[in-house]
Length: 211
Image 1: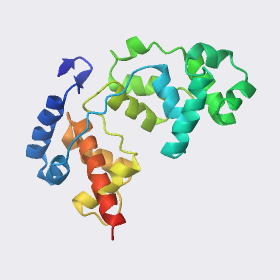
Image 2 (image 1 turned 90 degrees about the vertical axis):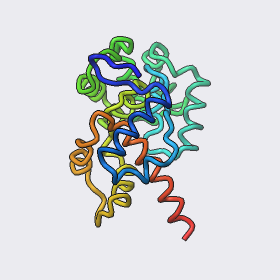
Image 3 (image 1 turned 60 degrees about the vertical axis):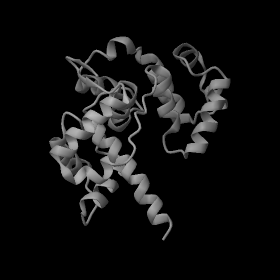
Image 4 (image 1 turned 180 degrees about the vertical axis):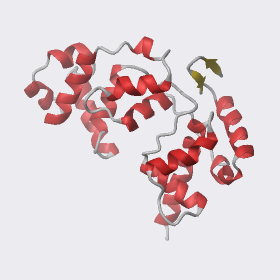
C-alpha cells in the first residue's frame, strides 16, 4: 500500500483485504457485499484513458468497444493527432460531433498526467472537470481506477445507489448527496466500499433477472 500526502493508493489484493476488514468492523451492514470477490480493476493513466471514457459515454459496452476500435485504427487515440484532425476526420473515425469537440478540448487542455498523480483528489477533480465532456463521475472513476485512490466513491453512480438501496433496505434509491453522506463513515476506504457495492449490484441484478 502506498501512503503519501495525497492519501492511500490501492495497488494489490492485500490492500483491498485491509480495507474490507476495516469496513466490516466499522459498518457491519456492508458485510454481505464485502464477502464477494472484490476486483482491483486498476487501469492505465493518461490521455487515452480519459478519451476512452469520453468515447463510451451513453453507449452500450459493445458499441463503445466497436467505436474505440475504429478510433484506434485511425490513430486518433493520442493528443497530437486528435488536436490536428479535422471535425470531419474525427467523425469518420467514429466520434460523434459532440464527442469530437470533447476529444479536441481534452487534447488542447495539455494536462500533465505525471504531475496530476501527485495532487490531492479535490484538485484533480477540479482540473479534469474543467475540460468539456468530463463530469465529476468520470473524474472520480479516473481517480479510483487509474490512480487507485482508496478513498473515492462516485456517489452519482446509479449502480452504487441501487446497490445501497438493496443492501440497506431503503425504500428509495439514495440520491448522490445522500449516498455521499452515508459514505462519509467509510473514509478512508470509500474506494473499497465502492468496489463492494458494485459487486453486490451485479449479484442483485442477476438475481432479479432470474425471477
